[in-house]
Image (tube, rainbow over all chains, first blue to last red):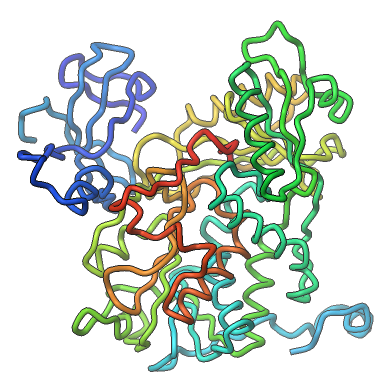
Length: 88
Length: 416
């Protein structure tokens, strides 16, 4: 990893960033209708794949904006980064 | 297989130690077992050992994709303690501590368990209040421990820096005298030998590729060495538990992270206890060889790579040098990473799963080594009887649905 490309600022040292977990987890609509298992799935269950992983990063010591990245969890290479709301 | 004793040592000395028998067999996998344990680390081998010893189940296979003890069992910093805050975890880790205390005799294998004490340092007033609360909770649960002042720490550990002018001054600590360290490889080998002597097949280089089910019941596993059938399958694979859960068709609340450790060149005896600090995130002890064994924190991102970031090492080493300025010029010999399976409440998941006959023991995160015998003991009960033991019942997977989390994060001196 070492370098991560922020979609706003360009390539920066990995220590400028903080990790913000799995991406594309949408908060369920109509939450009053969810049962406990569905809540648990949203709150706690994670894909945690071995290989390609879509995840959120925060450029904490830079522009302070969140963005998404596709990264390999075995060799840690960042394949692409893209803004929140965009598709990679 | 012969018992290890002073006589076997003397007998083998006659032949220059050339004729020791292998400590365990390397059998070909059978087609059918009564139970399969996936994962030949300390916890998996301990599970098989206690299933054979306590529950009379000997037709068991332990399947390991690499070599036994080559994962987190051989990659941790070997610290053993049981000073956890909440009743559920205190009881579980204390069970483990009691097993540690008789483990070498029980296994007839020297696991080099050394109760040299563990200090958990406090650096702020809030740290000290938490430490007092935790020590009180421990004592109510029958776990030894007391609060010590910075001066008492200095008297016991002359090289520690208790200067009050530094960024994170040491204000005091909790001390658990029965805590200590054990030789991690010996723990894996001792359990492997003990299980093998009771008839358990330990099958290395055998990777599970799918979990076979019929009508919601587990029937066996597909492996790199063929199909192996069993009505009970226990999964003890630490960082890879999400991968195995995915094969079985359900989700886990686990994320796998790299956790690093490093050892220095061997030096003369300088530290005869274990020092851990949550706040600055470093922990250190000295092995019998003389290396300083240093543990770092996890990297925040998910990773299966068995290596971590340079910034993680830098962070830890700077903490260690602040605690022990005398170590500043010690050279580091080796550095490595393991994959730890962290749960949202920093507690393990041990018990039944949505698939009948399939049991998971995972989520030990950064602190599984200390639990090795206790984890195996309760999980053996769970796999053998199909029902959780009272000690692991609170750690069921469904606690994430019911909301009965056991929030040990930050509360229990959770460095590792």
